[in-house]
Image 1 (spheres, one colour):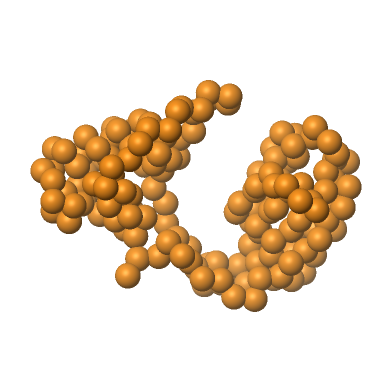
Image 2 (image 1 turned 90 degrees about the vertical axis):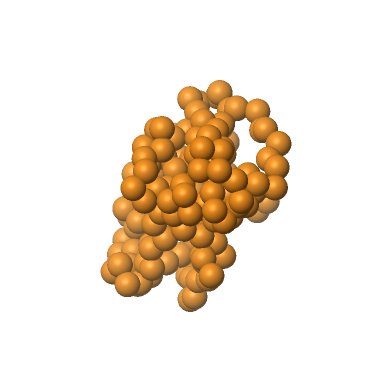
Length: 170
């Protein structure tokens, strides 16, 4: 937050493995705060308070509660991958050996350009979003890094031609 630091800083925090906090109901002010911070994670507490019509102290307490409850996991920048030198993006689907999700996730997390990893249901087990400098780097990532993992049974690569960030501000 601009000029004001939240209680636990600005890094992402996750509860310890296997210790997920129960969901707490959010009221309309909490939802408005989340909407504003999604659009501008650098907004000051004062600005957020004014826009949701609560006191600065109330906004500060609510934001800290949302952080403490794990609703807000951190603050980050939305990056234009192409302008950042990553001209090739792809979703890669993986079929993996049963019960290997945790080890595969840890290996995928270490890959350069890995942006999102999800365990899913359906025709494949894992959906991975990657950003690479070019198609040659993408090819190398898939053929030499991912397909060489013993737990990976097969992959399918879906090139991204265009992206739209749904959480961007006005």
